[in-house]
Amino acid sequence: MNHIIETKDAPKPIGPYSQALKIDNFIILSGQIPIDVISNQIPENIAEQTYLVLKNIKLILVHAKFQVHNIIKTTVFTTDLKKINIINEIYKKFFIDNKSNFPARSCVEVQKLPKNVKIEIEAMAFKK
Image 1 (cartoon, helix red, strand yellow):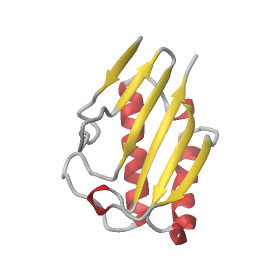
Image 2 (cartoon, rainbow, N blue to C red):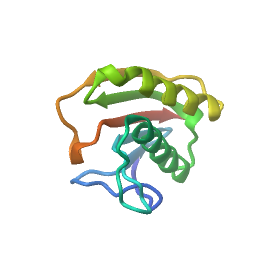
Image 3 (cartoon, rainbow, N blue to C red):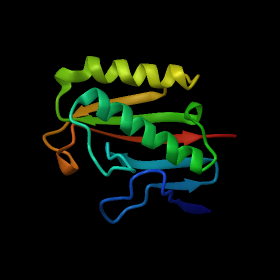
Image 4 (cartoon, one colour):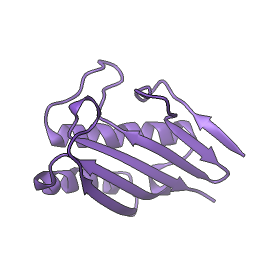
């Protein structure tokens, strides 16, 4: 059985989709972009954007009673792969700080993302 996951702690979807969908022991998160839920602002630089996206992912997971260590796969979309070292630095720190192994990951450069952000990340998590 599946359940739509929705929390006010993370940005509302900007289109006709759910923040996440829980199916049994899996949760599939829609791509998250770096919108600050309190200020509704988007940071300028890629480091701050990456951190905010990961923070929003964590907030959705926690709302669904999952944790960062439950993430099994992420897909990173960025408008500039030349910034991959910065993205990787923030990404690595996030998973280490949350005492998590690194999940499987794909990273793709795209021409443009919603609201002209520099990064979007989607995730899947599983727990027993």
